Amino acid sequence: MEQTFIMIKPDGVQRGLVGEIISRFEKKGFYLKGLKLVSVVQSFAEKHYADLSSKPFFQGLVEYIISGPVIAMVWEGKNVVTTGRKIIGATNPSDSAPGTIRGDFAVEIGRNVIHGSDSVESARKEIALWFPEGVAEWQSSAHSWIYE
Ligand code: RTP
Image 1 (cartoon, rainbow, N blue to C red):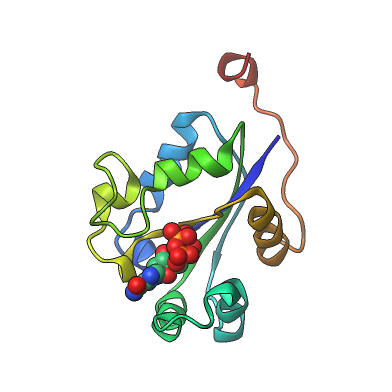
Image 2: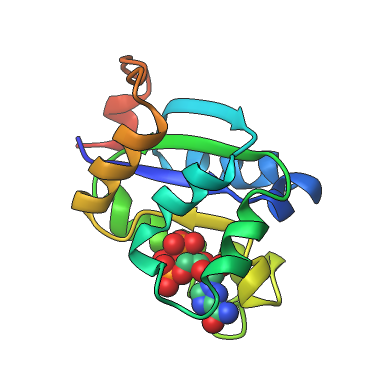
């Protein structure tokens, strides 16, 4: 099944939103396959956001990501990349619908609480970058109650 990389950014950790965010993905019917608290160093943040290195906000983005620990996660499920982005909401919290994580908990684009892979291909790359040790293999006993 499809997997995605989800990161709760430093503001989400500092504001105590970790449980709330995990709960939303769990209740939806996705499976947690990897989870760790990480203090990101600058070179690693630059690697994760390499595609944005030419953007004017790049330096501020890197400083934000290394400003405190983050929660790195791998979630698995049907269409989890696209649906995960819907659960997260639009990049700019001013445009995120109420009911989404950013719509409910964020105001500023530079403090938007959470990251989610934007495609199956970037999910594959991000999972390899953040979880070189691999992720857990397990099957939920509720599987047949969630998936037909
Ligand atoms: P993410 O990678 O964090 O899930 O966000 P995204 O795909 O929705 O947005 P992306 O364009 O990849 O931007 C990555 C993160 O950079 C910050 N950003 N700041 N000041 C700005 O104009 C600006 N634009 C983007 C946001 O924290 C965004 O999530």
